[in-house]
Image 1 (tube, rainbow, N blue to C red):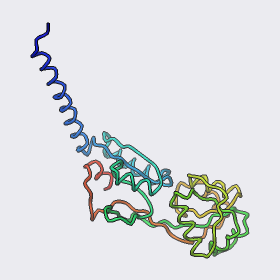
Image 2 (image 1 turned 135 degrees about the horizontal axis):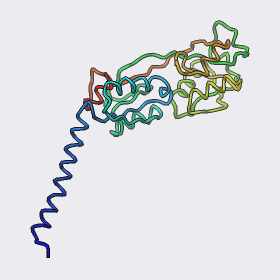
Image 3 (image 1 turned 90 degrees about the horizontal axis):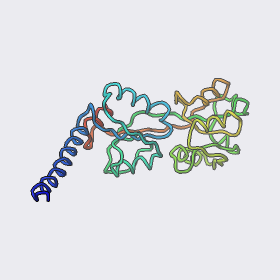
Length: 232
């Protein structure tokens, strides 16, 4: 039979190994060079801003681990609050006292219409001019849809959405195909169908602005050095 003390030693070895593993994991998370960053962002930022930030961070921190997640603004806020994400690029700014935010930039919106649309030749236009047109937008859970509804309400109209898509590039592509009109970001550098429509003669008229935000450096939360490196 095996001595009793051997079994006791084995039982002590397992917790010790688990403690060593936990200590190693803590060191990894606290190390800005090899730590973990859980980075969330809006779908609309997945084609340009988020990749730029990720590339810059990965270049300066090649051994760090980055976990990505895309979602709607409300979902991203909930994920940060539930400690499922460290940082999120989101919009609009939530009306909460337990979150710190910093405005990154203001993004203009434009009414996008097909090149042969009757509004395309105008130098100025309001959203109410397109009141009878079929609109293409994102689902109601998306902030871009909230913006469309808000601007339409300010104009005293109801934007009748005929088609919905999660991706703004798809929305723009449907406009280019002549299926309807849409309210889209005017300065998204990678919204290629929208740019192609503008180059083809589509009128791009600013009708409102949208604000995207990020964590406020004046009210820092508790982040690992890796997360702080991404913020900076």
